[in-house]
Length: 84
Ligand SMILES: [Zn+2]
Image 1 (cartoon, rainbow, N blue to C red):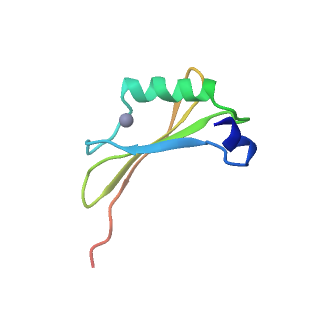
Image 2: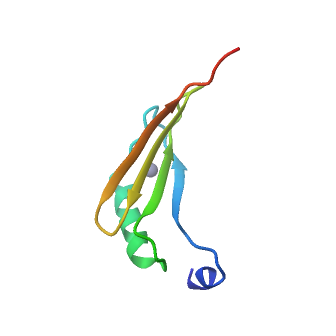
């Protein structure tokens, strides 16, 4: 991971899916983001986590910022496509 950082590949966060229509982070997600923030090479104030729900055909997202000990919800988004 340090070699990637030195080569300009900076980890800024992660995304994954949840089998939920309205996704929220699991306790494991929260601990993992705090742990990644502490153990990664970076100069950031926060990492980003995006969770994609399984609501169809809408797109439901959880978007949050994480540091060593806290989580800040940025947005819960539900995008409904226009059907023409
Ligand atoms: Zn998760």
